[in-house]
Length: 256
Ligand code: GUN
Image 1: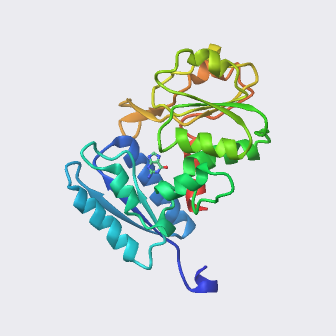
Image 2: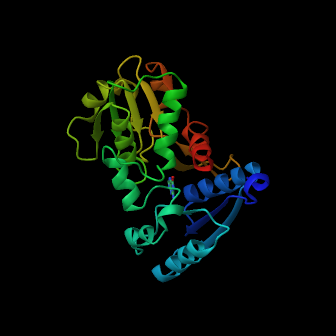
């Protein structure tokens, strides 16, 4: 791009607070940008910052012509209005696809969002590149967050899967999951999905990344998935590990 159009792509990341999983995501995203020759700028704000400060940071990146993508790392601290902040990101710079217009277009047939959020896109790309058929299959998405569960279920429907969404109030999550050809778990509850929840041969994608104290690892903690890997690996035909599964794919999709 530098040679052809004289521009280097630029990503801006806004990180509020000290969540360790968010810090890991952001660190990995910035490192990947460096490796790919993408300019990256980061604004870090304290946990107790005012909404106005976050919106000001977004606004200045909105106006910066060297920045083409803006990412506000989620979740934000409780006192901040997430919707208002995400709404303030310029639509054409919403690389996360979290702006309500991008999310709405993802939900509607015949509409095309400018961006699709990178975790759902990474999950579906993993399925496609692993030769897993999506069309006509039963898919279960466990979790209905705006970040992963909701857009993943919408994207799977775009690929013509029959999609069930399991949430914390679902009466029989095991039974519903047992019927799925494709299981995507995104709850943040470590080891929630056990081996007996799965249909033999199911394809399992684990999006969970819950930090668990571990003094022996580099940063004092390690990330644990939503799926009990040791059990699930005996039942599934394919499964993503945590870490090293969806995470790197998510980042690849963001840069792409
Ligand atoms: N938190 C967890 N996943 C994501 C993501 O894909 N984007 C942002 N902005 N925050 C996240």
